[in-house]
Length: 173
Image (tube, rainbow, N blue to C red; front, side, top):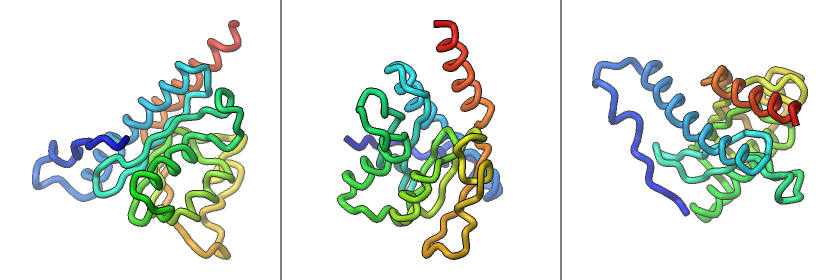
């Protein structure tokens, strides 16, 4: 079910620069993605979370759940995309922004491009499977028929710390 989330813009003074406004917005919605990541952790899943935003409102939420769902495609981004598409009753997520706590993999970038998401904001880099600059830079492939803006590093320290703590705890068990 879609919840109305108050826009982070309501807390900014009128004279704030556009870059500063966007940074506040990105951090606020990345915090929402971090909440989703914690839900994944609570289920024993790798803590990655995602939200889809349209016109300043969260329309889709998701967190990693391939272990509990027995489905390798249920990455946080995929779950959030499905939730958003269902909520707006359209598989095209035009003018939407997806926030995710970890650099997307090849499968997720493909889905994001097929959904026509306008912008993707991610937190920590993923050196083993990330394709937005780590292993390769799939979004910059000129032969693709759709392109979106990809921005990395938003709340990367917080996202990375959550992942490190999860895996440190897992190694102790």
